[in-house]
Image 1: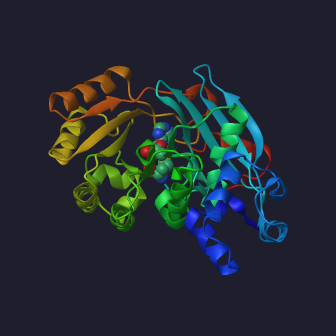
Image 2: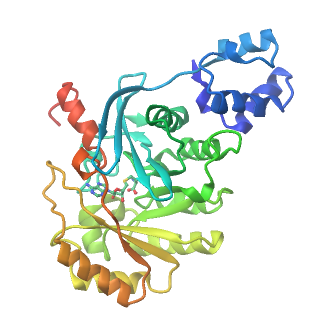
Length: 348
Ligand code: SAH
């Protein structure tokens, strides 16, 4: 049966229309589900009995099973959830001065195959349903007893590879009667699926875009990110320019600093040349080392030099503060550990 958390306001309106019900019921339903957090349709008091029965026969109010909760000394919490079909996903809650940020998973596994990333150790099994992304927010709020203020779609998976479900998720969490999370407080991160960046440029909500660049040229990027062989850096930069023109919004560029790979001064200068004149903000990310991968985190001093080059050349840049590194917070680490423990990992 379909999860009630799959439906956006428009989906509810369509459903109601097909039943000959009034469209204002959509808002009422959203309030019951997201404000009152009903666990049974019987809790609804302002709708007819036979309509409630109809809801019961069409939808389920489901949840996610929390298998593990790890808490870091800095307050970061990492949740491991089990889905109805047994698959495992992770969500991370970070505490910032501006509120509570949740990093959500968008797919079970990932097909992008980035060389440094733990998520890609296993191929994608399936897309997440919209409801399974919504429920991550719901469960984190409930289990941590907080109100989420910011969302980043930077967990396991490539959100633009599950585009329609992610877009519906964005509409649901943005709904003023539901979670009411401002579009400007939400960031979608992509490894660079160029056609989807164009499509996303026309999306009506003012959600932020982050691009995982991680290299200043095709030679290095081809080695790190297979997607670059399909959409190379110049194609990607064109798409970013289009997005900026279309939306008038600043784009975040993510750049993991990998020791001896992409962290030289030459790389820093090349990155400045590439981004010169673009309305972007560069997030330099200390690498979270992954046991199965050969990559190492750059030295503190090299990271500082890299940062200073960008700063001097007037690129907006920050060296990201690290959170939760003591609790396997890097993409996919907790999931892979649990899969190994449960014998779900297999040989390949
Ligand atoms: N597929 C999307 C979103 C998920 S990854 C994307 O590629 O953007 C979110 C970010 O975490 C990406 O920038 C990714 O490159 C980065 N990342 C993955 N593994 C990491 C690790 N071990 N340490 C630091 N950042 C990592």
